[in-house]
Amino acid sequence: MRDGDTVLIVDDVITTGATKAEAWSKLTVVRKMKPKGILVAVDREELGDADKELLEATNLRMYSILKIYFTPLQIELFQSAETVA
Image (cartoon, rainbow, N blue to C red; front, side, top):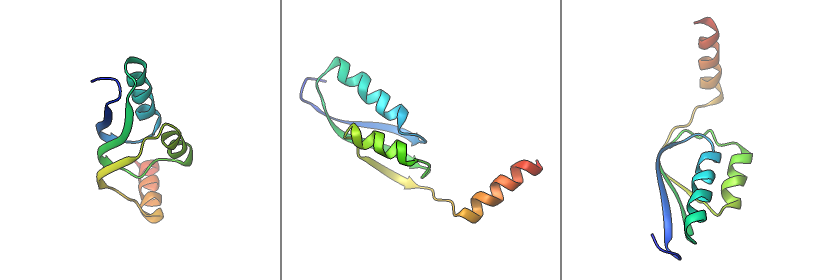
């Protein structure tokens, strides 16, 4: 990588934006690069508002191959199953 290169971070899954922002900050310490974004294989749709703001603040746009979305009813059923188990 060279200074001025545009970089796309590739990862398997995203749960929070903090780890991706941390990876980006480590890269920028070594080189002056421009962020293209983050490509993840699976987005579990778990990013909170703070995570989204953190990614936006670091100019990291997220792209995903697959999104997994749970409805409120599904989440409730999963949570109740955990308490029974």
